[in-house]
Image 1 (cartoon, rainbow, N blue to C red):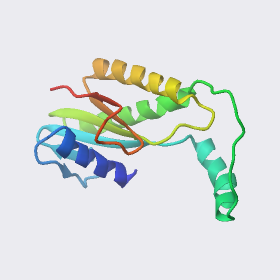
Image 2: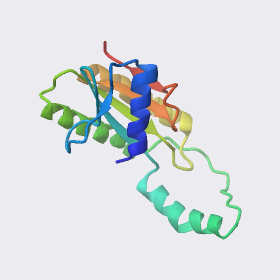
Image 3: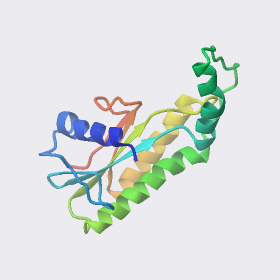
Length: 162
């Protein structure tokens, strides 16, 4: 859970989507926010576990020691299936929480995608996420919002069913 992403979803609901009276929900197993008839579940998509472990094991100690960290040039590769699996797992969790609400109203999945692992093509990763979001928004009827790296004012992907 990342409360910062929930705050971003709240700000997006107020300033971008102009949804009525959003408020946080503090009930375990419920979506994070409600705004009128809209349920909003907020998820953060971070680097992979392997990339985070490498950062903690290698990068952080070097930076804390005042060293300059440089990575060698590498050919960029397409995203691994785990990236899309993170988005899908978030959607599955959001739908379970919406089910607990009797599927009343409409569900919005709000994702803050904060990073791409080193060596992964950002362009290819973004294309894969766009393809996934388009397919899943159509097949589930769930509205999907994806912001890139805390830029909630200008979503990278926004499909809101009205």
